[in-house]
Image (tube, rainbow, N blue to C red):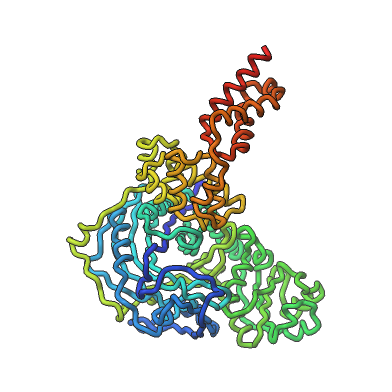
Length: 616
């Protein structure tokens, strides 16, 4: 697809957790805990407040369509600030310093006086009903010619445990939020820019790693479509696919809109109670309902069930809107009979609401009349959007598996931001800005590893981007050979973890001790896996090395090799010099890695040559 032809414009917001000792507005640690270890819990009902202009943000209004009781887990490591029962502490200086470092890496202009703002959020992820955020810098440069508009420091939201239960261990961890301009025009552009920004962030050595520590929000629009924000793309490799699927969705909605206009379609205004029609139904969903309402959509037949993304239809979009009222979803005649609803029931329904063949009928059911009424109006509103001048609504959406998306809420407006009165502003003068030092970019570091340390280009890049980079640099500084250190950190530890070893129990100091033992000849490098497995099982490095077979003398080694080659003479004659590799493994297993591989290789080669010479 030619994405420039469809007018694709995209920008991204990256949210990265910073690896600081304390949270952004309190002195609690930034360590995540097991939910089972929570020491207490409390409940909150959250409601939106009016802005200074007397308006309520439209996204917050959507969240208030149903009353929700939120439950929060507390821990020994959390405090009253997370509970919203104590004023926040001053802005974390370590986090602010990291924000300034990142801003300088992007050649940005710092804000002379940093003010903390409140961003209205009432989805349960913040006990206070808002998220604190501070603008740090503006106007940064990107390699593709685009720019970074802003960098903010803000507090991480609470972790959702399930449904409306949240864990407070994550709430308040410092985040850096990086927002680009809409400067990308292909799915690949978006992914490449996200990859570049991620590389710059990791170059600081002070960002958290692992799933959930970095999230990309992607803003996408096409010609005649609308700006849509897709939140929570955690996997870099999925970004391009997310963009492709959103383009597909918007194009499909535009095509449906054109077909609806061609059919002179409309949205019914009569809310019809059809509860009695389904008194004897076998549908589990409808059986439980206290109220079932029907909405007729003249001219919509076949279009409600049309696919707009893999696994998603226009009817799915309507269902997402209805779910904001607490219902489980909707039924529509493009998919019925199904889900326990029979063909006879569908026929009676059509007759009862006077729906023709070109009409679609939507069924919404609720646990109460109020809930059903709310869902009916949500579906009617979404159907009207399909006929409006903006058939692609401006929305915030969440990413689903494999890259499709679902409606979350309308795009927020300016009404969601208002000043934070509990945190004093921070001045960033020229002296402080000039004192900010910037680290070496990982891409440059990889080039240095290749040039100065002689690493293979692929290994150099992998090492530079690895979470074990600090340990690698400690090893090199201590005189360990680069190839030995990189092989151990990138391959050996991964291999023994795959075989079942708990490598999280191997400390950095233990790895360094083993590498130094290899470097000074105390043990052979072939023994590294066995030693590390023992350490992972609870042994000390010294005890693990002592358990190895005593160092084999040269005479003993020669005898072992001679016996192995003699016993496998036919194999040697058959494989010729190709026998060296397989027999190396046999010898090293026999001596349990207590002899240097180079010595074994030299002696084994000579013994193989003797056998081949005798054969001639």
